[in-house]
Length: 68
Image (cartoon, rainbow, N blue to C red):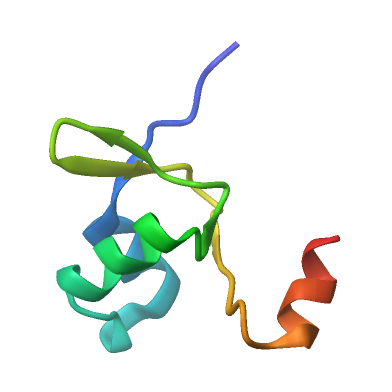
């Protein structure tokens, strides 16, 4: 069984948002705030994101409804 390789926050943002990727500061804030699901793992001072993870806007009921 092959495990998917975790991505750095910047790699994940590039795959997810393309040229419109947020800054690393914003990505770290999202990771700490639980706005990326499944939640990234923090290893040292870096976050590792599961491929296919999604940004969750906690203020948007439509986004939340898609998760449950």
